[in-house]
Image (cartoon, rainbow, N blue to C red; front, top):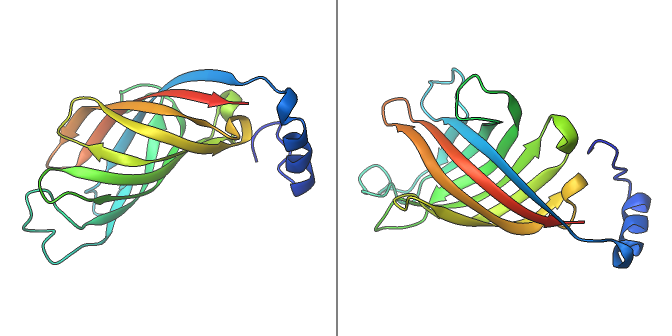
Length: 174
């Protein structure tokens, strides 16, 4: 449950009835996603759960699907404070370039957004320096969220599959 937010059905209904009188807010956030995909289970945060018969031979790894439970941090440094998790799934969706279709949720676990979440669903073409993903919803403080995320890869280690990505969020919510 989001800090200070009653999520019972009655409370949510009461909140919705007051919605016409609420003012829309804009929140700008920056978080850094830290993902480790090849740790042989040690501190690993992403696991391939399915793949097609061409995933291992395709230049784009087409057809693989992974589940993620990545760490969200305040900064790009591996010891930067943790602010939450990025949980969901992603899959390679292009035969021609390394592009992911991503459905995941940022779950905040500290600070004023503790217990709130932001849901993301979109296409992430990794060869582009900057990519844009839509915010399609949220909970807690971010109830009825919509907006956009701009992301870029800060670091990618091919051997360990350790990835650090910066996510700039522009969130409209009530």
